[in-house]
Amino acid sequence: MALRSIRKYPDPCLRKVCEEIKEITEETRTLAEEMVESMHAASGIGLAANQVGVCVRLVVIETGAQEKEKKPVVLINPEIVLVGSEDIGEEGCLSVPGFYETVKRAEKAVVKALDLNGHEMRLDASGVLARACQHEIDHLNGILFIDHLSSIKKRLFKKEYLKESKENK
Ligand code: CO
Image (cartoon, rainbow, N blue to C red):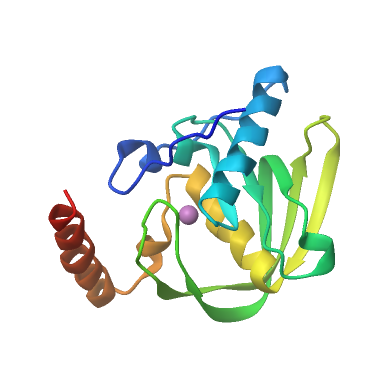
């Protein structure tokens, strides 16, 4: 088991549209396990494969918001349908460390995916889990939460975040 290093914005991997997983292999399982470990190590609640430099459609999520969400869920080739009204909540991202902003999302989401055994699964998500699903599946399409910000907030982000990451070098 090895921890995977998490790519940070503006790494080009974060802008890739990830490829569908055609066959679930030992490699897929190892990737999922190591992503869960890396997510735990970074105290995150979700991680997409391209955040660790592998451009395939796999995400891991563990919000811990409710009892049944306390184990990590692995979603392969997830498809999402947004439902419910809008919900505004704060988000952060392991690839954009130290930056948090409120993002408008759908209140609920229905996610269909494959699990690690290749079985079809369906997740009826609300609250934090619905938000995490939307955030992580966005990653697979090369979209970051900062893309959802207003143009004013985007400018602030670029100014603040990019300035800080230069200072930390
Ligand atoms: Co993220």
